[in-house]
Image (tube, rainbow, N blue to C red; front, side, top):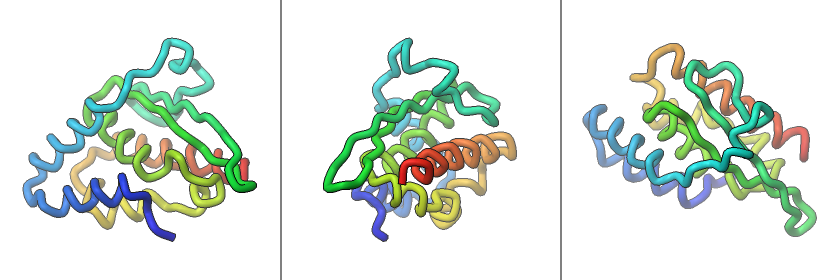
Amino acid sequence: MTEPQAFQDIAENLSFLDDWEDRYRYIIELGQALPKLTDEERSPENKVHGCVSQVWLAAQTAQRDGQTILTYRGESDAMIVQGLVAVLLALYSGRPAQDIAETDAIALFDKLGLREHLTTQRSNGLVAMVNRIRAEGKALS
């Protein structure tokens, strides 16, 4: 299964950045480019539990070619986490539920070296976000 082009572009851009500070800045810039959620989307149902920062993931479903497609929007109150949300959305949003359920973002993040400089709390929050998204994919596939 191939990752979406948006995620491939991020992975390629990260491959050109050797210094962790440059990678950190790039991830923050990705997060800053995300559109803000509405007040309704910042609801208790959309809040991701297990994150030290506040994180909301809002999902919308649609049907295409007999498959359930999940589209995500997300936001965090922490800059680096907002960037991680952006990377997760590039990987998962707009994909069939079955693909989402089967895609292990943690392995991909490790391959890209995106978790090696995160604090344990941030890494745990990332795992919580991934588990939430994959569980939604599994429930709808």
